[in-house]
Image (cartoon, rainbow over all chains, first blue to last red; front, side, top):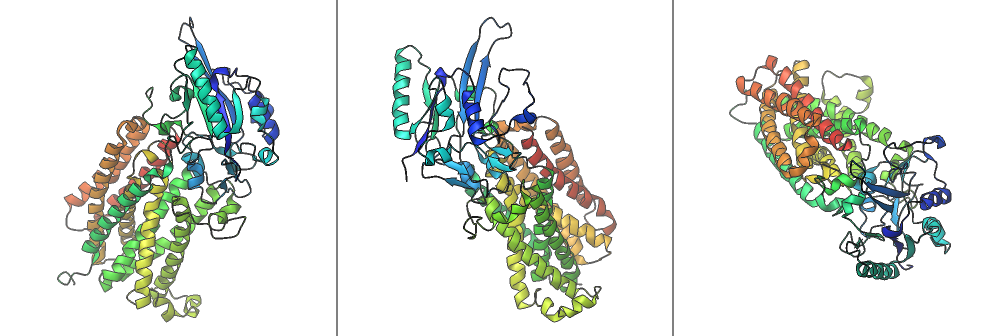
Length: 260
Length: 309
């Protein structure tokens, strides 16, 4: 197995140019929405809005403006599949379409997925959705095809500010930690890393440098594995089954006295 | 968390809608009816065997329709077999920790049991006199049904599989990261109890419609009253376990749950069975229909309210 590879996204230097979105769409031949006709969100400069089956990269525009618009702040973050070390989507997938690659990334095989959509609800980050062209669940592959050819993913290659950095996880974590220290020294005490250690789902192979709470960026503060409910849910169901079984035996069994 | 009650609010809805709701309802009825029929066959009176036959007559078609519903719900329906066979290696696909994976196998296995019991019930039914069935060697088919030794094995294993089908759907919802579904571990238990209740109601209703006057019908009616009580307790436990997530039901879904499921689907039928404790076949139709509607509404509320978050 090759060394684990991933992304480190420094949101403080993202300028919201969406070059990563475009590069991703071009390389992965993803269709435009609405047949290419312009669709405006109407309440934001962000017109692609979310990650889904045809948006594997998405630059979030967090527009923090008060009603009177006297003050304001932009938070920009290029979001993508987190390639979790403990991946909920991979865990529930009933067809085996979702695999872990030699680069420790998570990839959906489009020839195997039958569109049951279990992974969509299982992903703690809302990354996956159905691609209406293939009618299969799709998401970022961390450019598996480019990685196999020794190339870097299209998005990080296109990023003009090095907000998206690609490399080995060990190297990226070191770089990210240095950047946090640099920001702290420079007076930006809010900077921290999201998902850069094993505490979050065993580690996110795409992790982030943020300067506000995760939920401000639309990220869950405590993402969990879907299987956390498997054992407790099954135990309760078995308890229910025993109660139903006993009640049915009590009511439906042949009783000598009541036999006509 | 800025007014967001749970991390499950950051996830995407899997577009599980009407086909899935209907499957949850029909799968529950198939599993529950088969289980009740098996208990009557194994432990009940011999005179109640026609009642058990009704259960088998419901279970098999309901499983067939369930399979069809699940297949057409796939975004790629022709790939339904990928659930059972790994597409690239052609080896069996089985993930014991994925409820959908075990559920696919369970539906197949339960389908085989319901098919055997369906044929045995047809062969056993004096009113069915089809030449085709006669050619199917009636005595051999009847051996598939209790009290024949092989039939006992079929009833026990099929009953367990039926329970599995009725209950795993709630666990399938719990093993995601979606609002409500994964915010309580009790949905499997809730769906299971609801399946037992709706199945008893359906058998009482069908027995009444086909003019079967058997002591077992009154037994099922009383059994259903207990299931309704149990379902009320489990539903209350679900509400408590949801905690702050309950705000997802502070809208029309909550009203539908309170009025449609709790009052009309549970409390009214329960009150009606207390008012006339002596079983009266003429008075069972309305409560049975209400229980069935309540069971369907329960699944609509649980599935659709999360889909709309």
